[in-house]
Picture: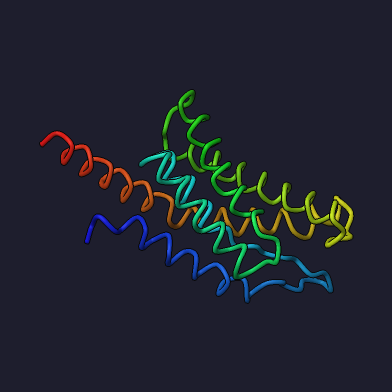
Length: 175
């Protein structure tokens, strides 16, 4: 059962994103703030940092394709971005310490990159028609704050689970 824990958490986070997306947008002083949950990509970045880059990229490709099929009409967008972010995280972590605070900051930066890539892509093809200032104020900042809260609550748990799974994998390979 412990073997499948990494993929089970991925599936749960994949299903949790649209549920938490129902709470968005939030109206404050007649302004609407959009909170986009990016739980799965944050977890996959943690998988690439603390467990295995190859598996994180495979999971990113799989769940990115599922995200493309079920939630948007453009096939290939998320299935390209998710593995790319996992690859970038694993390459950056080679040069910095794998401390939880570093992993959290790196994860938040990569989530911001995901949001910016999606904004530029949707603006380029004409799906979104908002200015960058409005995107920054009403989409990016609230999204980053919401995802920071999620990481503050669950980041240490992700690290603990993934490091334990990595240690179990290493013990099995020694036998």
